[in-house]
Length: 208
Image (cartoon, rainbow, N blue to C red; front, side, top):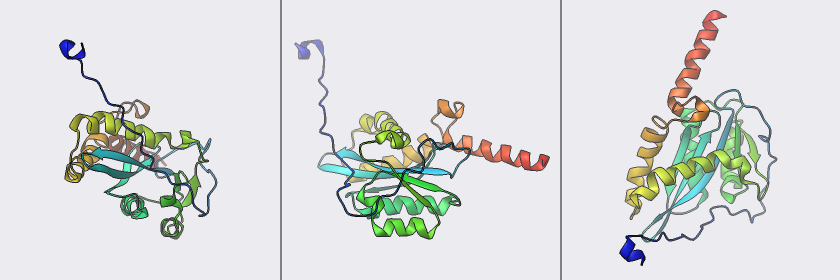
């Protein structure tokens, strides 16, 4: 009957977890709960998602500035090694001001390993982590991943790792950061919103 009506069923994919919190590494307190944000580079949120390809999965680590919704760092890899998260963090640190910054994540081993924590501490970045089973604190990163999959991944149906490498950076940098409008930003894309913040800040300094 479905064939006669031209209806195609949609397969429910198996959920793949990207968080391994079964470790003995130090867990840090949540510093962002109920915290008011007044500008960029005050709170970054880090998370990892998976992208299905024909022969398995590819993983994307991304860091989002909660105030501007801009993806400030990301990395793509074939495994969930801490090196994936470190690559995304390194990208963000190179291009952004980290003075007074809070880095927020879940309790995954990628963010609690000594190499990752050392980078944060060496830069004077405060460390914040969600409680187990409380994804609300990572809602901004989850929202980005949902947008990425609905507006990019599910439409292209990547087959190979090379497909992911080719398309994901384009979507993040040229589409999401520069073009996609956010109602929370006055219907502006993240990069335009940040430029507006800088412009307004400069005007205030001139008045002073």
